[in-house]
Image 1: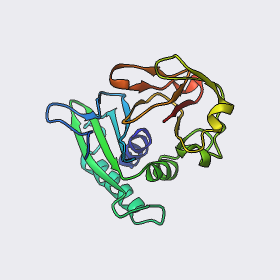
Image 2: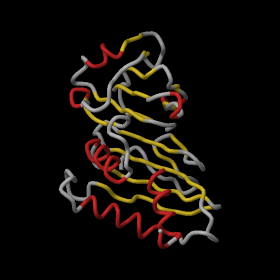
Image 3: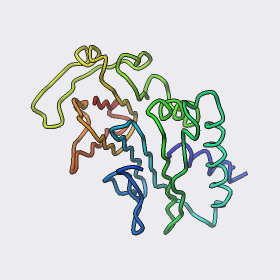
Image 4: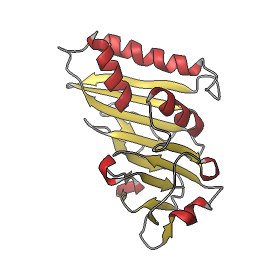
Length: 211
């Protein structure tokens, strides 16, 4: 993930479901990982797979040290009081191929995805959230929303009343696939093939996905 690679590489300087990985490539759901791709897939059971591809120069960084750091960070989370279940997070794949490092995490629940990103990825509580709309307290849900087919519209006030729905709030560009009914996305998001949603760059404001 962005932060894991940024922080891990800095340290190296001193520093099953429907989604999966194929032998001929790296995929999270229907999202192919390339350099610079950050992908999130959430299945119907709330299992999250997160994948990232980042530039990696073996002349500068130690691949084995980076992998050990990632494994330790995941292990630390799993042994903490934050983890909701045993082995809440698993490193499904770490691989360096053609100067690109790929990481895929299998995360047991949306709750663990939310907690892990805030604690270890240092996501700002005011600009990142994954979970029930009713529990979204630190992020202000605002702006204009549209259904994926662009036929229905809603305002932030309408979304805040959808207590039983889930919402994903992201700051930056991700490719997201939800295995289920996506109800609304913020206007700065785009929907492509297989329902894959591309969120906006960080300078275009927060991106929201309601499902």
